[in-house]
Image (tube, rainbow, N blue to C red; front, side, top):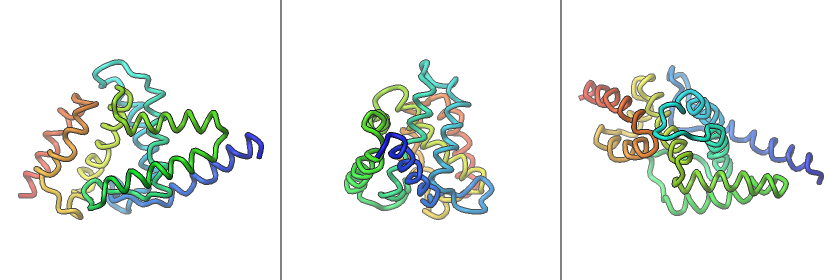
Length: 192
C-alpha cells in the first residue's frame, strides 16, 4: 500500500467512531452522544478554554490528543465513568485497539499518534492533564444542560461525583473546576 492508501484506510476506519454511543446525551437531551461528537466537542473546549489553564500550553497538542483519545473505542467500546467495568481489562483492550488502529497509518504517523495517545493516557504532562480534565468536564456540562442525563441513569450522587470526577477535573484545570463545582452542587442540592 502507498502512504496515501494507508492514510485513507485509517480515515475510513475511524469513521466507525460515529457509531460508538456514549452514556451521555446531547445538551438538549434528545439522543445519546456518539464518541466522534464527543471528541470534536472537547477539541473545541480546548480551543475555547485554553486560556484558563494553570500554565501556558501547546493548545494544538491538546487538541490533537482530544481528537485521538477515543479512537480506541472503535474496538474497546465506551466505558462510562459511573458504569461497572474492569478498568484493567479495559486498559488492555484499549492498548490493543491503539496498536491496531494507529497501525493502519504509515509508520511515522502511527508512532506520532500513538505517542500522543500514550501521553494522554499517562496524564503526566500539562497538556495531557488539561486534556483529561476537559474530557471529564464535558459530560457534566451536558448533564447539567439536559436536566441530569446520565447522572440519573446511573443514580449518581453528589458525593460520587465529587469523589470520582472532581479530582480529575481539578488536576489539570483547577480554575474550571472552581467554576463548575458550585453548579454541580446546586444541581444535586435541588434533587434532594
